[in-house]
Image (cartoon, rainbow, N blue to C red):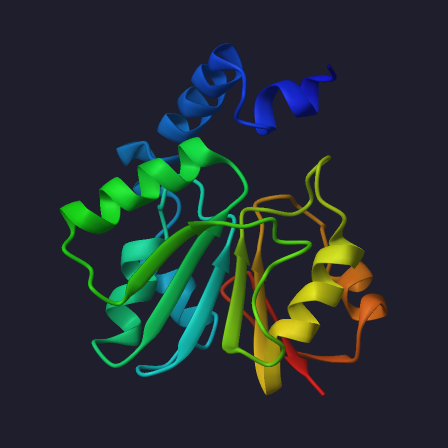
Length: 186
């Protein structure tokens, strides 16, 4: 069993504990000092009433901000491939009494959602990652977006660019907003 499988498959209790500690770090109150979730979510170009997919919800750090911005007529699907992340995000959704959020386990590179299902897809703090192909996930996101839909990517990795995503599918790069890369489905 490799380290990726050990930590990310959700079958090892020790791996789940390690992943849980990573999620705790991601949800640290100190993070709010550096990363304003509402400001970053607004920069993605989300509007009330949209249907949005959050891939890699992790600790649910961005989930409440997305849900609030979407309003009661919007719909958010918060997904992650790790069962501990799904469990933690569900707890947060219940604690914040968010009725417009559906949390479920999904592999972002191969989802079960129908073509052209979403107005926007957010990939915040997910790429680059050793277990995720930016090219594969971008092709899947292209499939999931409605025509004109927005693919928003945010990462803390300096000098990273969405070049691989732009090569993977017919996206048009829009101006970046507060460090959020925005690509529109052509």
